[in-house]
Image 1: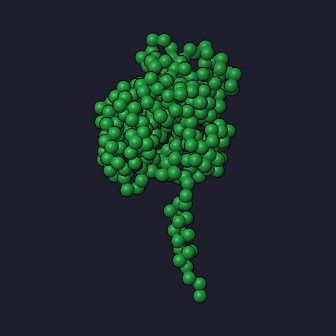
Image 2: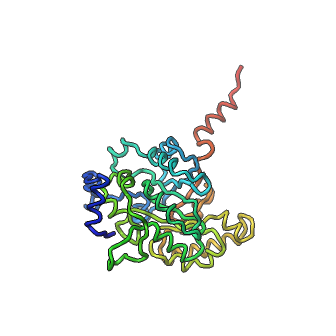
Image 3: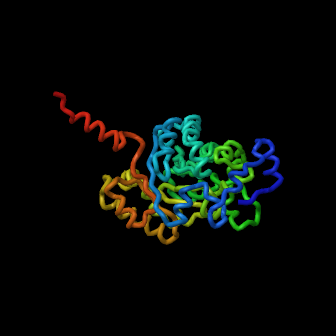
Length: 316
């Protein structure tokens, strides 16, 4: 991403992020800047990524998720209260200073936020406020057309200098990145440079997932997936079944999914979905590159085992 230097300089002075040698100097073995977004790194390596949905939007919920060993977490604000102060606390809870000292600025679990506004609503402020808190990715539900997808891309990007190769789709995100830069551990200048959409900007660290969950979206999938700036397609199987007018598990749902799979393969856009443990191998073989395999609700395996042992223990 490229910006007017005079604008960046004045803004950096205002917010006080004049330098951050750790963020600016981190290098990978091949001397290229270390990726801050682990999801992007995995996609570039051709490795699958695994995560869960989180509806417990609290500071300690974020702390627990950061040490989960998962590649990403989808912080769900579509089906949880849209409260950006709770989101701010969750994101702060994901910061572990020991991890930063030992491993650098790349969070072990990438925070992605599913916003409450459907793609067809095109509410720019929702995406702006989410990104300004430091989220590393946006997931927009119910994107039905290429126009919806393009609006989501534009809302996620800062304006570019005219004439640069990645000028289109023209960014419309308002410039106010002080807190997000601090959260990422970068100077304002470095954040502004790296907070662009991958893979449209090869150096970008933000990802935008477009949710495909209606019959109309499947019909328009070729046009949607051709939109520059999309970093992933995410199929919502439950909403898709409802939209098709069939029960979940009906063959019509899988037929629709196959159409999306084929479009993603043709354009090399990463594809993901929600699935259970028994479907993981099937979906990976089908061409899915990232999977949400559950949620933060319920008991963990170890807790379930402990409860099971306790309930089966017989006292004399």
